Amino acid sequence: MAKITIFDTTLRDGEQSPGFSMNMEEKLQMAFQLAALNVDVLEAGFPASSPGDFESVRAIAKKVHGPVICGLARMTEGDIRAAGEAIKAAKKRRIHVFISTSDIHMKYKLRKTRKEVLEMSSAGVALATKFTKDVEFSCEDATRSEPEFMYEVVTAAIKAGATTINLPDTVGYTVPDEYGRLMDGFFSNVPNIRDAIISVHCHNDLGLGVANSVSAIMHGARQVECTVNGIGERAGNASLEEIVMAIKTRGDFMRHTTGVRTKEIYKTSKLLSSLTGIPVQPNKAIVGANAFAHEAGIHQDGVLKRRETYEIMTPQSIGLSQNKMVLGKHSGRHAFSARMAELGFRLSKAQLDVAFKRFKDLADKKKEVFDDDLEAVIGDDIAGPSRTYTLVYFHTTTGNSTVPTATVKLEKNGEVHMSAANGDGPIDALYNAIDKITGVKGRLANYQVRAVTGDKDAVGEVTVQVEFDLRGRSKGGSKNGANRASARGRAASTDTVEASTLAYISALNRVLAERRTT
Image 1 (tube, rainbow, N blue to C red):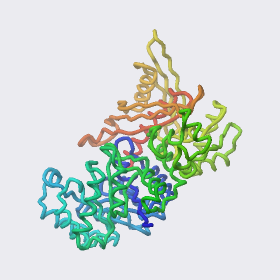
Image 2 (image 1 turned 180 degrees about the vertical axis):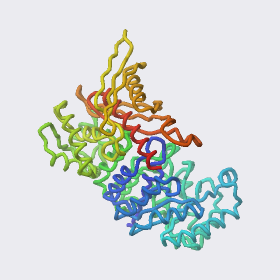
Image 3 (image 1 turned 90 degrees about the horizontal axis):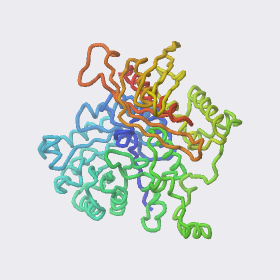
Image 4 (image 1 turned 60 degrees about the vertical axis):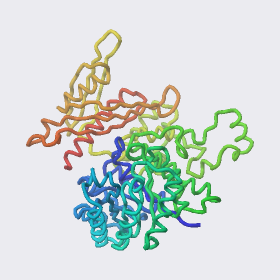
């Protein structure tokens, strides 16, 4: 059975999609869990895209062991050198260079001729080999490119030293049969193709990302690029868990295998949701809340008589235990710490102190604290930026015949600041009061609240996206909107007003922390 290399790009393609951005500590948390999942290649980021991404890739290269650590680069000297520098501490490292090969991209995006693209491809791969012998070359928008031109470019890239050739469906345009024929064409028309591994990277714009990836495997591809929970730009990428479990479950037909530790899948999915604040849809294959749920009477009867009547895999195969440890107000620090580790969280002592206090506060309000509660209540404290402002106190007054008002006390550097404000509702009033204290005006771009668990004492998790105007906090004026920044904040509490307040403060702290480091 041929082994399929699993190339995870959650921290690169996935993280650059709207709403999924992570700071360095969050990326490290996720990278450690991806290593525990045993992915073969971990694309840690795009080093040349920003100083923050460069530092994140470098930190992962230094601290995360097991997978090949990969950095993405355009076909330019600056990008390639930045990637080489960022990954150099990794024991196993790769540079992933890419250039568009479709006529529409070359004409309107690159403004380059075919000859120029061919020359840039050879030169870029050759430069990348000076930093590592593991070089991946991608024909961006391969499924809308002329095959004969790609054959020429790929032949040159392999000759220059590329060891992996990626043929991405960048815009999710192809269909399985067509994609399979594209793979066949490369094996028939590229003379040195067997000197490299064929890789595929499928987007999900038509909902065919996983199907196209499976088709490519059946036609000779030996690496699949994918993301946890299928996150990524636009409609996302092919889902790692779906591809891996398809290969495992249908090994009788596909005759392939992966090295992924499938029992880490559920934990990895939940950790990503916790870090980004973006929940998985209930009907998501493999990791959705309903993936192993049965409500119809006929289904329930069948499963009770024999599980295999309606389940083609077990919950345990992805690490989903049917028995959950329930923590309460009498649970100790050791049990709490152990459960956090089981859920995939790597907490420092300081982070554990904060998390444990929040757990105890919640346990005093609820009879039972479940895993979902734990993941939610940790919020951004697990790996968030240093906190400039901390909530000390809030009070709101509202009603259908009164003007909503709020009073807020925030602590900063040991000093407590207080302000009050009105608003269109209690949350708007709270945010206005916070803005008065901080001198930073925020505009709420997105606000989501969800009940994490059931019953009347359910924890409410609030996720906000806030656009801040930082004028007055920076020196030297604004350039290109540099005094505006957007950030995500997330918090949970049995009181959704409190969660809303904490989420807003979390977003503010994130922006201020990032501003200090740039």
